[in-house]
View 1 (tube, helix red, strand yellow):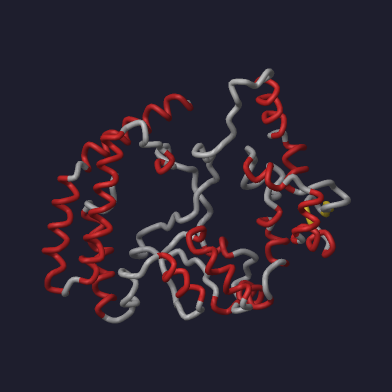
View 2 (view 1 turned 135 degrees about the vertical axis):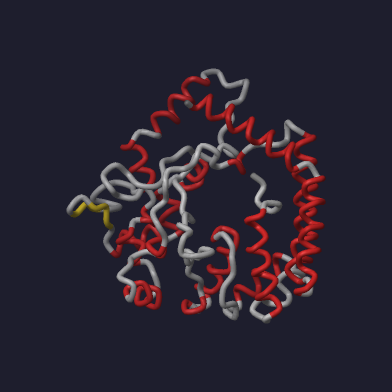
Length: 302
């Protein structure tokens, strides 16, 4: 479903309207551009925001570089009320919007396919992710760990360029999440190593909650739903649906700020007009199309 025209969306934006007029939302929030937004986050003067980490990671990197560790951000599992179970985290998925292509001039395409399939075997994945046991990591009580020297090497760009196929593996198919033995495929997400690489401030902060990673504030990721992740569906082959999507996005970008900034007594009228225009933009046709594609994809994968 498209979220914004549903009855359950209105209370959320009505609350934003309320806190906006209380001065709890930066008055520039809805008129600044993305660079201005990141600059503000990078200043260390922002108390909080609602965003995905990948979208503001540059700001966090900037704060860390400035050693403003106390001004970085921590995710919190906020929900409407106590009856709502938060599910912010999700299981890793295959990103089908990127990948390798094999040239039509390739003499032995099956060899390339076999190579990538072989690369997905556990032994090769461990080699690419962690390196060579005894040289790049060690195992203690079943846990993959690194000495200070090994951690330093992994963070040293010169060493990485000389010892790892970083650019190749970054774009190659890979396993993510957790191995069957409980270790993380990505060394940077191994709880013991993740904690060690933190600033002293972050370590102290998490230790007060008896945690090793910020993700522990959230419920474990449930199994992904059959419709996840619909954002990967490519609309380019369907120009009519793509036009509807673009039109809906334009309406949201124009009218949602109006609703949030509307005078309290005018919110309902602004919201109702927004919903009518969004409906008229083709929401039903868009939802029916997405449902059809999702069912087709699930049938292929079953």
